[in-house]
Amino acid sequence: MTTPSLASLHGNRACAAGAIAAGCRFFAGYPITPSSEIAEQMSRELPRAEGVFIQMEDEISSLAAVIGASLGGVKAMTATSGPGFSLMQENLGYAAMTEVPCVIINVMRGGPSTGMPTRPSQSDIMQTRWGTHGDHPVIVVAPASVQEIYDETIRAFNLAEEFRTPVIVLYDEVIAHLLESVVLPQRDTVPTLTRKWASGEETTFLPYAVTEDGVPVMARPGDGHRVHVTGLTHTPDGFPTQRPDLAAKATQRLLDKIEFNRDRIERNETFDLEDADVVIVAIGIVARAARRAVQELRSAGLRVGLFRPVTLWPFPEEALREAAARAKCLLVPEMNAGQLALEVERIVGPDRVARLNRIDGEPIAPGDIVRRIREIAA
Image (cartoon, rainbow, N blue to C red; front, top):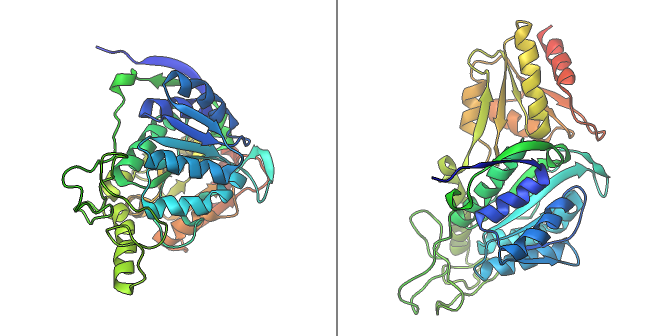
């Protein structure tokens, strides 16, 4: 019987530990605050795991190298922050179109542009979903603790492998630099998935064939199965097409493989929602503050609860509708000008949604949420 160990880790180092445990054996990146500790840790740990670490000249080439490594059959990752994530958008779209499994860590900081490198923000919520052009699939997970960074990084690799898509792990600078206790399972007990590899007849192989779950198998490099990889809209054989009917089918399959598997992807956390008149919707460090605020407000007799999307995209719509069904009001506190609130308003309607925004590089504190809810309840 194997026994888990307890370690004291800060968030970014937990991310690196989770990546290694998930089977990541290639990292390409460019240092950028506040994610640099991930690259630093991977540079130490990957060689010990017979993996490869490369510091690239910029973030564009970093994700390009990750895509190449993944096409070569290796689980691969990069890490960055807002300005670097902006540079990765073209290659993110390429990975989505070519269905290359890869993981991108985005540790959010103040913006826009180079903004405030050492201050927290949550202003990349919409960019993670719609940053690259076109209708494309993507999965984004948003951990809110050091333990969850470790766990969700592992899950990100599993989701990338299962659905052949880029997966983004999104958290703010405060979570990145928290120091907390983390339960680390023995390496051989970590649940890991590997992409479906092609087998059988080589001459009739279709690299983007329509399958029952919408996810085509991948050709293992050197095994004889022919693959044509292009970012152009392509047919099941991998070659470009501009025929409207074929282009529509190709793009729709990319979207459907995520949409039809929401039950395997979506995850959320609820706290004290059973009788809540006010539901707080929050992610990251703001969700931590919200949980404390709920406890304080409950002790004062106010019925308040918390809904936290762990999977940010696809957004857990049905779970939010259920959580909000009996609520008089929903409060969305976030460290941006209102990005998460837009999605909440889309799902439940704008009439019941209140906002609490902060864009000055300081986190939203429990007291801020308490005061805002008292205003709403007055």
